[in-house]
Length: 125
Image (cartoon, rainbow, N blue to C red):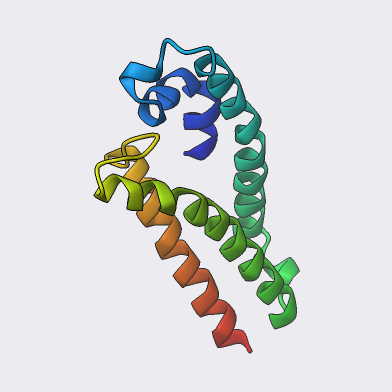
């Protein structure tokens, strides 16, 4: 999903994160371009997830799985921590973008995946 939103549909995603009144500023086009940059990271993590699903036997030891769970928790945590200030600003009626719809879904999903990955990691200790 992240690769699709950031790379293929980057102009649409930029409309989600940039307020309508700010879309005519010189910074709007670089926002669209930076979305494509972020998509490479999303694609790499997605490919890693798919490879893990079909090759879990190659990661059969608990220490290997622990490393991967921590990696995914940190990846989702970095997304969540980056977007949380925006969500908190929105509650006060300010902020660079509106945290609703797709953005809120991403924020909540990242939080739940942090909990899931850290919870599974702790269970392996």
